[in-house]
Image 1 (cartoon, rainbow, N blue to C red):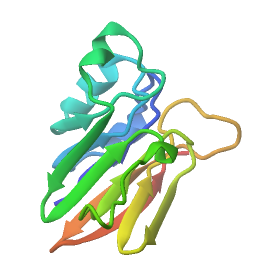
Image 2: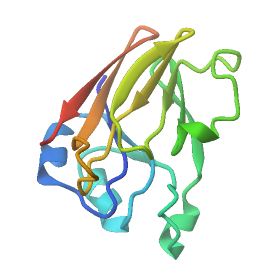
Image 3: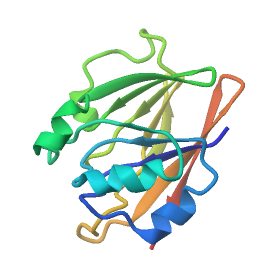
Image 4: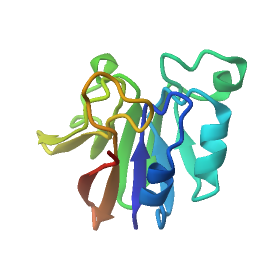
Length: 151
């Protein structure tokens, strides 16, 4: 199973992002979508789970949750936009993976048995930060992730 992780598109769905997400069975967007057409484009590839980010204030985005708890294979996944707003103890809650965007800084790290993934920004460049997304492979209850640079 291959899961695409994308965030902070800010209304821009790059062809490079679509190419990198080819073959994904599911896509998770961690907020700051920008335009509903971004979700439509992603849905053409695979089913999409998406949350609202801080720029997603238009009427179309109000139907989106600000957090999601998902079952992905054998993994429990918690999705929020800004990691600074995490108000649960993922380890105590039995969460295997936390996915968050907002900072535009791609990062993968494991802390206390929980995998934290920020896929970075796949939208317009911010400062000198890379353009990126991530891929998640749930493997028998163990999560493996990799960052994919698009620039």
